[in-house]
Each structure stands twice: as C-alpha cells, then as structure tokens.
Length: 304
Image (cartoon, rainbow, N blue to C red; front, side, top):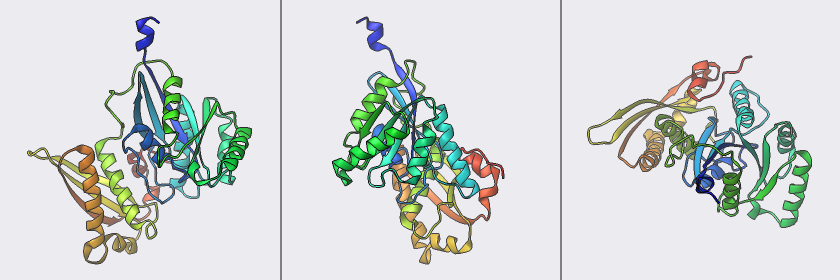
C-alpha cells in the first residue's frame, strides 16, 4: 500500500440523538475518553450542542451531544429540540441512541420515524444492554430497523464501556477522508468559560435535581488570570423565583458552599491549575423569553 494511503486522515461529525436521559452525554464522554458533557439524573440537562473530539488512529471524530428530543412545551424546549434536529441535518453520520430498558416507547418511535427522512448514513446504538435479557435486545433491534434504515446496530453499556470501542472503530473508518478540524490533543470546542458554567450547573442539579427545575441556568460573569497562574472565576446561578434562590443558598449558605466546592474541584482538575470560584444566586424572572440568554447557550431563539 502506498505510504500516502496509509497516512491519509479522516475527519467528520457524528450527531448523537435520542430521547432525554438515554445516556448520550455518558456515551460521548466514554468515546472521547474524558468528560466533555455534563451528566445528571435530571432529563433535558444538555442544552448546547456539545462537541467532544476523539482521535482513533488517523481519524478525528467530532461528536455532537445534542439536547434530548422530547415533546416541547415551552420556548426553551422548542429551541433545544430544534438544535438537536439541526445537528442531525448538519452531521456526516447520525447515531440514534436507545435505552434498552425503555425500548421503543412512543418517544423513541417518533424520533426513529422522523430520522428515517434524514439523508445521512445512520446507525443504531442500544445502550444499557446489561439491564435487559438478550431476547429483548434482539426484538428491539428488529423493531427499530423496521422504522429507519440503519447501516449498523451496536449494543453498548456507556457506563461500563462495554462495546464502546467497536462503535469508535466504526466511526473512525466511516467518517469522510479529509484534514483534521481541530488540533489532535483537543477534546472539546466548548470555550473554558462555558465549560466551567456547565460544570457548575451539573453540580447544582446533582445536589438539587428534585427541588430545582431544569430551567435554572449558570453564567460565567468574570474570568481573571492571576499572577500565580491560578484563575479567579465569578459565576451567577439564575433561578426563576425567590423560593428557588433560598433553596440554592441553603440554610446558612451551606448548599451554595457545597455546590461551589464540588464545581471548583472539577474545574481545577480539568484546567490542571488552581481555581478560585465565587458563586452568586439571583432571581431572573421570565429569562426563557430573553433572546440574549439563548445566544449565550448557542441556541436559536424560537419565535412565538
């Protein structure tokens, strides 16, 4: 084989779509080999079209972890669903992720049927295979393939990593030939300010996912590089009501201190330097109808 053929590079975008909480963020993090997308028990946590970048041999695969597709009720819901389908339309490959336990419920069925009209090469990934019997997996595979033409079907456990290497190898050999879009050592194109805000939002939800609606958001207000190479970060947690602000603060400020400590540790670990994190909590009523907030999240502001 000529040397040029051996060293030719491949690079492409893969959109992961599916219903909320089927494991897309966990799978992206597993494929990339590092945490690039936040993971919480709360549905519809992913808002931005997060790009995680994986290297496999001479291939660079850019994974787009899309917001979960669901029946939208509010303006933010509509923006998130539009972002997910927009990613599917823009990608080189589209992967539908199904939860083996939930199977082809109504939500998954609607997504699969709509996905059939997307012209790109499609694959099916069934996640959480360790939680169901083989017979059910085979029936689920057959049912999904009857709704859309999938090139391949993979069965994985994103949590344990079982089967994920096969998925990565397939993407590596299937993305188009071409130069890399990002440096080989880069794992995400999210700006540090936004990634830091996402980490704090994850810690907020992990601590308060039962008490706090997913509409709550976090913004990085200031980012100051200090002489000792550490960074001072100020962020604001925005909630919709005063009662929610009190929940986030906690008795004697205990909750906000715990959230800050959790977030600071992870931000510092990711940046490999000391971080000074200062959190504030403010009420911002009706922020879902402010176009500026959508631009900050990388979403299109939907009309009425």
